Image (cartoon, rainbow, N blue to C red; front, side, top):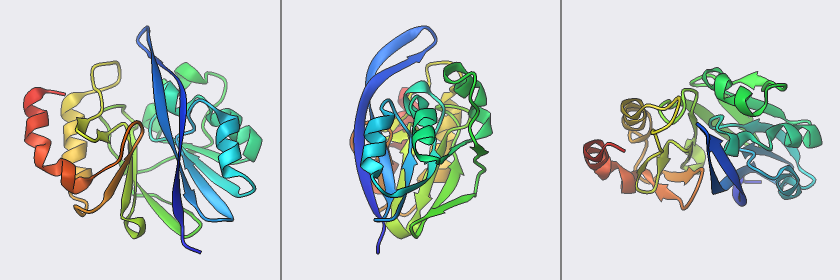
Length: 209
């Protein structure tokens, strides 16, 4: 049974620094017919649980702790018994959304999260948020980038806890070194590849976002 990747799009709101925006989020499910990992439990725990179906949900991995990526995580964990994973550098952001519930486990750079034959290696990629991570599986030739890298450039760095030079370092040193054919599955919007984005690094640096 080979692992597969499923995409669920959920809608809700992103709030930070006193502003609120309507957003559509990609929720990624990686696994097989028996067990699965969810990357970013956004907005709608029941819709995500329905996509999981009868499979065992082994982990809810948060690419970062902006509210639109974690707002449904505790409810989904309660529905399924899955473990919520977050990089500890994002705990201040997590607490803004879930002051009374901690993540269950802390992500570490280089750690591998395994389910259904999938090996997701954690790449700590700060910049959009201090604890932002990407998840790379060479076997699937895929990297899940959260809000670190999109089609067309880096994630936003204009708000609290973000830093443009840091996200550039993360993208250059951790992501653009991956094989060019690697699929980039993002937190919002359409997928791309490392090879499609890599030639544009200097343009992004020049424009400053």
